[in-house]
Length: 480
Image 1: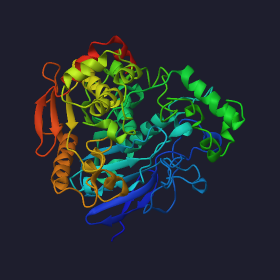
Image 2 (image 1 turned 135 degrees about the vertical axis):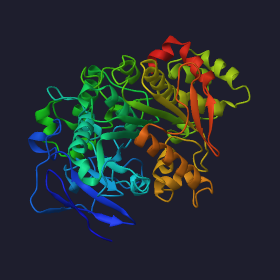
Image 3 (image 1 turned 60 degrees about the vertical axis):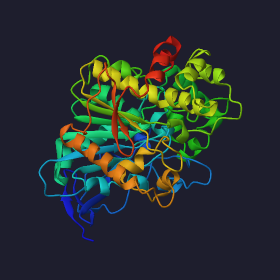
Image 4 (image 1 turned 90 degrees about the horizontal axis):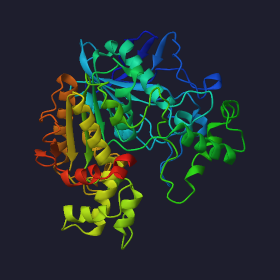
């Protein structure tokens, strides 16, 4: 192992080189959001003297463990100095390698770039400079407070992209050829940044893996804050929240979810009229980002990675109503898939409502506005959760053996994992390099879609039945 040193505009940084890839971890792209900077937009990172050791990841944003029995990514002693990023480069002396910047998901309240499933060494060996970004999540990043800008987590992401523009050439990357890519909340982030004036010019391409529905009005976000403030015993003001330890907020930030059918997270991007103006596809339809190339897609059985299996005797009419469709839409699903059991139809309906239809609408809006667009459907069934939400992460990063990966892939992974992973990684990096993922572009006439399976194939409108059900329902259109 060697220890390469790179000179950035903020100071010199020492990384680690392993198997031909240089990794620099814990590089600050903004100041620690603490003290007077708590709940404020990201401030510039301070410069440093000497050589900063970048062999270890920075701390995560404050958050709870994602599930009982799972180790938390953040502990109270970690503090708030969380606005860091990590860089993997296959050639520090290169001139202008494509750059790929990863934004993690996690229900807007979990996740960190240090998680082992996001190790980008394998991706970098495919010929790109890979960057993974920490940003504020939960109340720290998306809680609404009077007089404080909303969507601080998105503003963190923009600050990280500004850092890339200023510094990535020192790591062999081309600041003029940046691709933002992310999954779930990270995919929603990527598409929101597509439409955000503050992010114009910071990236050339985007890959959105499983775009979820959902945003909040300021009134809805204020109601969430009021509930959390009541549970914490403080006023819903910046002055009161800024002095609360992060763990005190974490202890009550799920208070808005205690009602029946309240969902899995109290947080999502807030319609602030600045970064977020409404559903992403509505903004993209104006053509604001037609010059940015876009891949978007979904896993075929999204819900299998998102929630519990349906109860016995599930009432599909009630499910249709719950997701914003007329009750008779359940019959339309039955007609579209006449051989499917109700449990399978439940998965299809929830997959459509939560991710697949929002993703297709994003592709349609971008293409309609003249943006070059590609769509995919990850249909390959992993042995753990089938083609469930999150299966794309081990495939894109090429890592099967983390705890996250084995949840989808088992141990050992299926024999065809390696080949499919290599093909997807080649598509992603080919797109980052030259806007060529290797399959036909999406258009509104044919809805051409890459089916990621073994072997991969291309198809026209594979979700035609679902798409028509949602198109024919004004209530369904409004709900997503």
